[in-house]
Image (cartoon, rainbow, N blue to C red; front, side, top):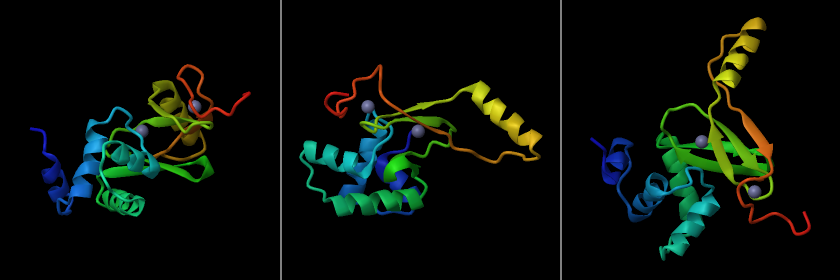
Amino acid sequence: MEKSQPEHLKSAGLKSTLPRLKILDLFTSGQDRHKSAEDVYKQLLASGDDVGLATVYRVLTQFEHAGLLVRHYFEGGKSVFELNEGKHHDHIVCLQCGHVEEFYDTTIESRQKKVAAELGFAVHDHSLHIYADCTKTKCPHKPKGA
Ligand SMILES: [Zn+2]
Ligand SMILES: [Zn+2]
């Protein structure tokens, strides 16, 4: 059975406060799985919730420490959060607008293991971030004239 949001918080050792519930809700019900602190802040503002950016940062960090969210550090100092669902995937990030897509490619996965094995390593984990420009999806922050 699916856990309710307060149950999720409780099992992570966190009390249910309004900002925590709202932020968790954005991650479980939103379409974009990857959000920066600014994305979260803007989405809360857009839905009329008065939660300050400092609170957003604090809650996201608490969620990260509690294992509810995973944080990915991308080039350029940008970091995004996503629900910790324990499934490995890699990321492709638009350098213009920060749009993130995730992917899982069995060939890439097995090639990496093979390369590591040839060098005498057994892989525990890896993270692959591809930096690119949006082409198919609309990139709203593309600089003019680009
Ligand atoms: Zn992801
Ligand atoms: Zn883009």
